[in-house]
Amino acid sequence: MHVAIYVRVSTTSQALKGTSLDSQITLCKNKAKEIGYLDSHILLYKEAGASGEDIDIRPEMTRLREDIKKGEISKIIIQHPDRLSRELIDKLTVCREFEKYGVEIIFVDTEFQNTPEGWLFFNVMSSIATYELGLIRKRTVRGRLKAVEKGKKVMPMRVPPFGYELVNNQLVIHKKEADIVKQIYHWYVYNQLTLRQIGEKLYRLGVVPKRKEKKEWNASSIRRILTSEIYIGKYTYNKRKTQKIKGEKTETGNPKKTYTIREKEDWITIDVPRIVDETLFNLAQKQRNNNTKNSGNTKNQYLLKGLIKCQCGRTWEGTFYSGRKDKITGEQQKYFIYR
Image (cartoon, rainbow, N blue to C red):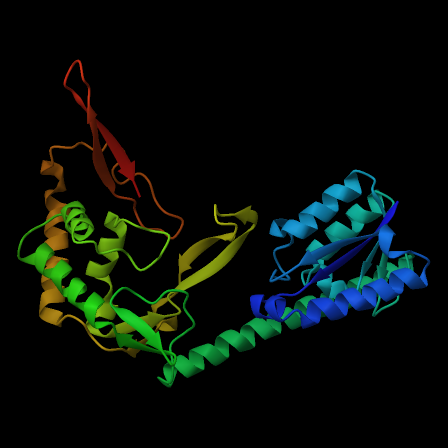
């Protein structure tokens, strides 16, 4: 039987530096030797850059739980209970699971006894950790929003909107992309092009979206450019409330999230450099409304029109793609997509 060592750091920067992981490993290995285990008996589970909340989507925690179910581990050594999770329910769930398979839990920094008193102390300390995590979140969000209100910086963002770049926590205009944004508005308002036609034009011109994983423009990306007030110099924060869906993840391995719209009085709007003037922006909104009203005249009938909604509340819109013609009948297949 083996002894497992589980170590975790929350951020990618900590993982790259390795200091916190290395110190946890050293402390846990010393504990293993203290209770009579050699290095050959140790199985290491090293979680780098994993949040203290999402226990169900951590690959190393998943591997550890699977090995425990196989009966390969008799003890698990962890530096501190918060390395398991900062959420009380998650912590209790995995601890009970370990206990069910007869695995002894050993914490380096705190003494844990599998007694009623030991569990009482464990639960109290875990509740305090959960409370502290909530306070940290609250202070962090409050501090960021205060900075936004003062106009000192923008909120951290993975990818700035198309047409902008992030310099010293400020949105500044990206000249080449901004010219494309203006061209999109011109095509839509003055040339009466559809979103799909605009996407095809951008593709032919070799213009790619901001996100590297996307090579082609879809209707929703172009619609976002045509409807976002950021392009007339108004950037709104705190508009949506984000909540993670526990135990579920996206194709890229990130936690799945749901979005709800906050009350308007909670929104914070700051000024950023504008790319298009309000007259052109308003013409685009008028064109969009006209297109919506006249959508009943389209030659393509979308049977699910208005019936599918995103979790954020937005109604999905339909589009279609033409497939290859049948070599025998000459008929061309159409594929309808809602997004």
